[in-house]
Length: 331
Image (cartoon, rainbow, N blue to C red; front, side):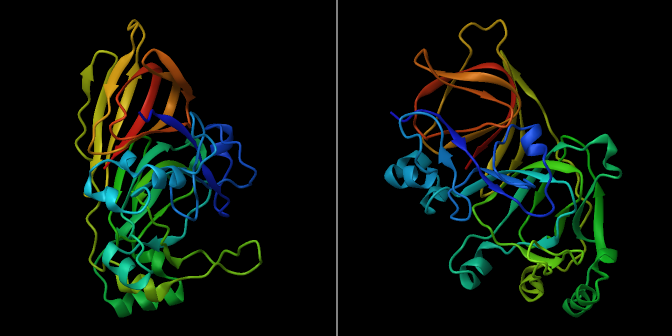
């Protein structure tokens, strides 16, 4: 029987990143800045590695190729490797203004890749970050020609919708929605397993090679939603309590479902027991606190803020102990 196991992330040193993933989330990766950690990924641009259990040292992709049943019976499990990609993002500076393609466009134009629909859970907005906001969609509808003109002359920021954010906010970003995370914000991102990003505007920044980072205006114009975007509203969220835990649904779509779970097993000697299902794998991203996981009274591993662990489908029953907060992702 496959049991839950910890993962080690891949890191990205994009120029807009900071150091919070190192100092606050315990990421010991040899890069600076550390903009993103891909916590659960089988994407070739950032493979995660199994960190605990008998398969430690294998990539998650290798393990799932050896035991594809770990993904479960959900239709998304037919995708080679993991159908989702889970990240921490530390945006010390503004990210580029960008858009992602949907599955159909990616399949036809990007070698059969998946598109990229994603959601953000805002982990923190520092008090000294000024006006915390994101870019989310167009303020009003535009034609393709109008958008091309303002992208080329650098005035595109005047036409984008800016949305204030606070810790705990949730944003669902459909493929085709122009968007950007602005400086100072730390988020957890759950997305399709894709690394397709079409930049429209990048503040004329230069990379380590001294050259401006490339834009992808033609591709962006092919996939962007040109209609004015309604201001996003926070979803209705209802905490459901049970002994030792509370949970709330953050987002559900055809690609993934995300819950937030608050764990506190103080006064519960046996911890919180959980039985894995056959339909889907589960991924737990610890966003605060610490604890441990046991299976059949055997301690499998301890976890703390910043850790990510994978629960194979049909892996039986295990128990949570500790005081922590998770994002739980399933298909």
